[in-house]
Length: 441
Image (cartoon, rainbow, N blue to C red; front, side, top):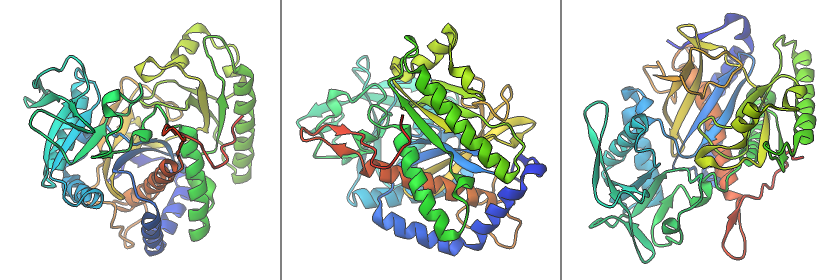
């Protein structure tokens, strides 16, 4: 049984779901052709927001850290998808080095690492965990809340290969988003598969470039199946040259927020949507819900107080924010036990392998749920959403998960295109040069 969706606003979404179900064969064929042209990332997760009249991705993570929140029902699908990904990247792979984030005190994250390692081991590979922390100088056992443990080992560099003492892996899987940059020990590893590629990290990647790629692919997809692309795509704008501490870039923020809100209001009037529009201002690089504010009027970003500026000025690893994306806000009308909820869909290779609901009892439908106090509930579906059932209602399981999966896979496809379009300079440094129009200011 899927979570509650307010009936008064479920009509347009149900119509969208009916179109997806009625054209599922065409949709799957279209995706198959796209994956032939664009190799999917090894894995990813997508945060979705379901407003009833709009279902759209609001964040795309290429280093997902919540595998421990997936229902055990989806474990076989995870293993099958991981096997396909490994075979595509390296058919002879037998040893894999998994490099996690440096969150050794975050036991929820360590449970994610354990679950991910278990999935990979079930593909037939030997998997060990390597740490980039300088204080990890010998194999170190870390205890988990459930009584289990994991062992982190110090990584070793030998020539152009990375490994552990007595362990030479065929491939290296990063579960570290490189927000602080690429450590020297990871550079120039041209003899091993490094997945995802280094330029997938937030030291290079920009949310606005992903948004531009997503907008482009959604326009193609929507024309193919005959839907309004606005139903599944959040509009956005960009401001650079931002310094929240020095109040630099405020004029750009005010202008772009006002312009985007004006566009949203126009669309709401056209579709007779009564909700109050809002936008989300957030750092153009980074994750963990940091550097985010919801705005309903342009005046709210003029003259931010010290606390607001401090909140927006830095993100993970203490990095300063110099660019922001202003993204159309999408409410969530899904609730679990009365609390606002949003689905997070997980993918390995090009397959949806499950997901969970992010739930926040202290936040509303138009607020950021990726904040302290959030909880996670596994998607309450008994069957994978890759097999829709046309005999059931559009919002019945597994049909709603199928709809989520279509939109999530569009975001994953956009990420594939985004990574392809990152350019290398003559000196070999990878830069993020968005080739698609991103409404930058």
